[in-house]
Amino acid sequence: MPPNKVGLTELRKMYDFIPEKTDIKKILELNPQNLLLIRLGMGCSLHMFAALLKTSYVNISEIERGKRKSISSPLMSRIISKTNGLPFFEKIEENYKKITILSLGGQKQAIKRAEKADFTKSEKQLADKLLQLGVDFASHQTITTSIGPVNVDFIIKTCRENIVIEITESTRRQKLESMSYRALKIKQSVKNILLVSILPDHITEPLKKRLEDFDLILKFSDIGDLEKKLQLIPKAAV
Image (cartoon, rainbow, N blue to C red; front, side):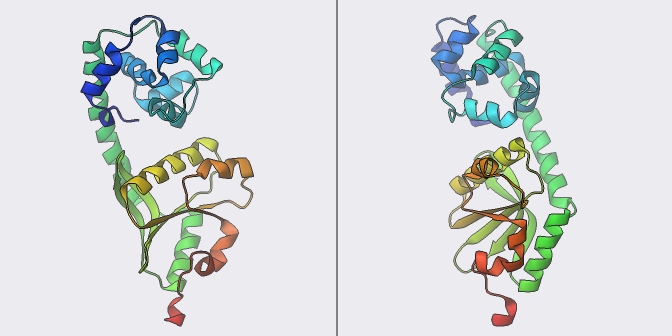
């Protein structure tokens, strides 16, 4: 998670609660969320740290947020091999400030690129269907959440609620986990919202389960009768 979502005061409490600062295994067994202190001690961003440990940034984020209560033995071994312990807290604080500034700057640039991005093939198909239905929608919109701004593919405004649709042509586990994490933060930050994901027809059931934070999961073949799936009223029926 972005370090600025955990204040320095909380980090200091986490740090002071650790009796032995050199035994990485004991530090993480005491509290897996201490992985954030280890990452900051090494001066790594979330993505840098995940690449170093040969895992997904979503996996690291879930450990740091306490969503995962334990760390697998292979990952624990890789973490131990990369660091000898925690530095003085002053070093963690220094890295915290640097990474926060870089994270916010990179986040803003990524959002700007996403807002201006061209439609993918699947997004174009969905946009054409929404235009055909005559519903009020916007594409590549940014929503403010507790993890910062999140850019979504489509927002449909109805009299009952706002519908957010995320559509992807990817079946990569990391991509789907990232979508689910974003969906969770949107639900926590926005009221009266329905979160919908549209996935390739050949998606497997285990991969679909990665999207547990969405309210509705559809496939590309469902776009043809989207008005029924989402209970939208076609323009011709108004």
